[in-house]
Length: 460
Image 1: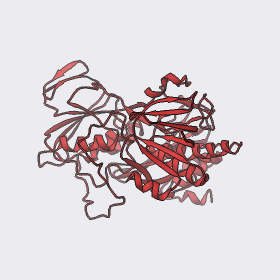
Image 2: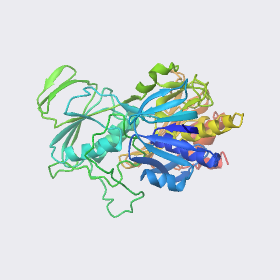
Image 3: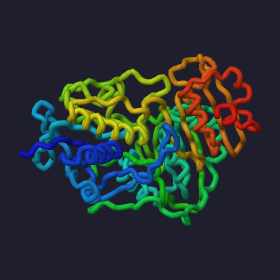
């Protein structure tokens, strides 16, 4: 059996990025990529917004496209059944085996479901589940969206033509990303009509899997990318536009039928149509027998070289937990932006190991930075944007212009620790520098968010 120098498991953003980087860094070596889906997810239109902020689109591509662009990469459409790290062999569902010298696990995460086998509950995590959602939404008059993260927030905004009950366990919406003030800023937009974007050019090609009727395993598809709603028609059976109602501080306990489900233990008889579920857990079931060191939240622990406790086995993306000493203003969130960064960095670490070397921790891990869109607003998160890890020892500065922008700065010891920017503020690069440089802001604090002052002049 031929032994591959590198093996990557997973056709999502982390896995494909890792395989592409390995191909470029080690052009004479064979790279094998195992994917359970016939479509892989490749990063497109990548641009560096600032030193730590980046934007990109995700393109679903046929497997053969990657082999064409990266001739030393072999894409294997199959399902992994076992990974024997002692023998360095990956076993596949069709009985095949792949030997390797180094492997990177990029199997992502799977939805956390309230009723995994309930026909009325659909977990949205990958492209296949979105396609199923679209088909079922077509005949729906009312749905329940359960969850308060990024996908739930985007879904509530995108769905048209049916009533939406948004069940959240918190006191405000979108709590994974924003504070109560920003949530209040967004609330007036919950039931606004979406702007017509049908005339805008499509930024990425879209492909359908061959044999769409084939069953897809719960962990078979790659995670959604940053623009997963682009060019999707999410419309129910009625002609109404947005009709969203939010239930706060509730928990869905069970779903008995399309006509009855339980919120916080009390039966509700308003027919929801069907429910969508929220949250993810690292997809590690196939690897539990390998004695990997696991984190409390279930991810495979990796060191600052993206390597597990088993030599030669690396991990990247949602499946792993960064277990090195984090920089003061970085933290891990299971986001597509960090999946890309981890996949690229893991490839560099693996290529360096092949040369008997190590690389320094990438600068992208120096400060948390993420850009996304909610309710048609650009949202930028920097550093400890919600005071993560600071307890009550921080100060908040706010600037809010209704319907235009929401700017929050987190100060710790008169130095910027984080920022949340909603709207076209053009403050991200300046605030990024202030967080990284830890400038003492005592002399400027009272004027930092003054809209009549160009703060770039202070810190040019």
